[in-house]
Image 1 (cartoon, rainbow, N blue to C red):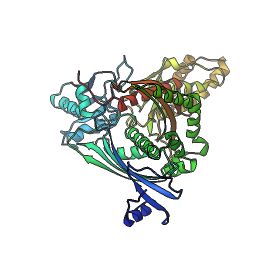
Image 2: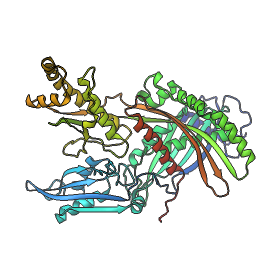
Image 3: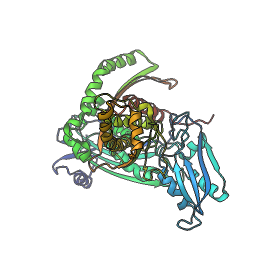
Image 4: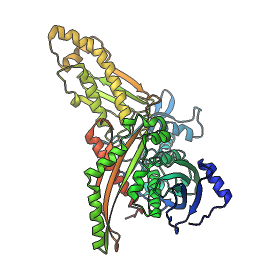
Length: 546
């Protein structure tokens, strides 16, 4: 294959990727194919593609077709204030948005936000079932609603229909990807250079954080030498919001597109190329640092092997090839992909109070958006308080009630995002329960010496009579080494009608290492839900207004 580089280009690549100076470098084009290059040759392939430029829309986000913001103006100690109820995961930021947007921040005429909270819908049990299309967006509609209530001195409710909402903030960030990838004849990738242009829209929104998210998930493969240049492009278009693994979805897709291209170029089985470029523990530690944990914690290769066995992958692959050879107008495909997702738990407050009747009220910084956070917190509160009994357990789950906190009751609620708020909220609640247990245990031992075995109600009654503090608040902060990696893999088999384009998902197998699950039923639902939501992103490209 004829080299298409001049000497200056070759030297630039050697410097960029720190290759040995005696290494032969050639540039390939899509029309070229390698002709048994020697093992000491690295072939560079250049290509580009688009992600999301056809405005992909999630149809599987939320089921309610109204977005509501409520605001109420009040007089409080001669200071004008507003309370806002905003469908967002970032109510703390919403509280600071109103004074800043009034143009008179810091003066007596600026509206003060006395409290911001996420709305709770009793039927749905979901604090943001009427939220905007994006999870973390603090929408300007909430600000407009609060300022209107402040000016008119009257409760105000504003809402958007779902179609308008999707036009305003729906969809992930579109981007244009240009890349140059170096690889050997056996499919081992040695270097990757990425140039990404991200459509950030008219305002910043979540866009400044999208770059880190993309690269974090892209690093699931061992690229050897990795270099990238990401630019956020300001456009005269609506900004895209964040929605379930923002940036990580695009990063994973970019990685798979490059792997598929290399396999196609070398005429190799893509399964071989994928497995060849999975991380060893040493390369994982190089790419992810302390988040990689200890060597036994790197379970991705074992997950892939187990998935292949449980899903009968190779048998099904042969069946797919046989089906395609026998059918002209319908074709099947089967593929697998790995995933590495880096998370970092965020600081979270928690408060547990025991009322006079023995019921338990819990407040946490996390917001229930249908991910089962309240279910896990409720289970953790019952588990934590049951530690008062060493042998005979008192089942307290039915006594636990979670209430939605606001920015007055918990002033440092933080952000519900990043797949860690549930575990962080549970840890904050566990610590609060430990404080209550330490207060109640001496009283319980004293009562048992006098009365024998005692019930929960008796214990709480006596605690109130003896003025034991039955409320405990904590603020859990993760240490510097608390970030970690999640591993998973999936196999999907689909059938496509080549005449109509109709696509049928025949089977999907997903394996996910969630460690020690706080609530297996909830976590299983989250894995299944994320798969369905992914279908919405990759298959449904256009939103039709009916």
